[in-house]
Amino acid sequence: MSHIIAIANQKGGVGKTTTAINLGAALAVAECKTLLVDCDPQGNATTGVGIDKTELSRNLYHGLIEKDAVEDLVVDTDLSHLQVLPASLDLIGAEVELVSQPNRETFLQDLLRPLGDKYAYILLDCPPSLNLLTVNALTAANTLLIPLQCEFYALEGLSQLLQTYRRIRGHSNPALVIEGVLLTMFDKRNNLSHQVAEEAEKYFKRLVFQTRIPRNVRLGEAPSFGKPILLYDITSLGAQSYLALAKEIMNGWRARHA
Image (cartoon, rainbow, N blue to C red; front, side):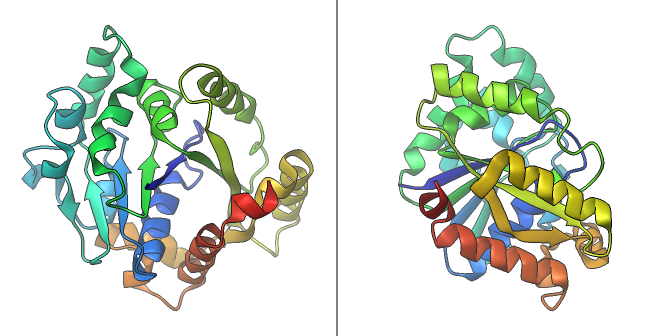
């Protein structure tokens, strides 16, 4: 079966979409067939891999609400082992339409079920809120990956995400576990980055990934060219960090450190 990872943190600007795109690309270059599911109405993961949303007639909304077959929604990328289930602003409507539906938290799970073991990894890029789309992603996932930026208020607000995580485990997805906490925007020259890392390791202990994603200009530039960092500048620190993260995940980080 596919290993489904929800990448979530209700705080914006922490590197969720950057991680979804570049982890997906790193897994793909390791020849792991990977599907990136863009669950955010902003559709940044879609454009970040070079897909023009305006040219698509169907996207995740049509799978969730209009019940289009998931196989008909998947789009290829420049990497042969990476495909995308795209998003657009239509998803804002999905949020409203799902509210009145029975079992509304399982729509994404039901949509992805026919894929079975077609992919080694399915990455769910969540919006920067704990809304119904995020709840759907956590219900569909096997694990939760939490990007945590190395800034002053990084740990504030995580309690709300963890409460949602526990609620999902208690009701709709008891098997959900934390894949790991990923430190992003890490600046080794900055004492604050080291302090946040220490606090995260104190709180989450062995769930913190060994890989730390650095502040990196090339990482910031890549989305404007519609490319994962591995296709934009594979020699950059950002690219090497996401390759290292993919290796940790493929080597069974959670299993070894549970």
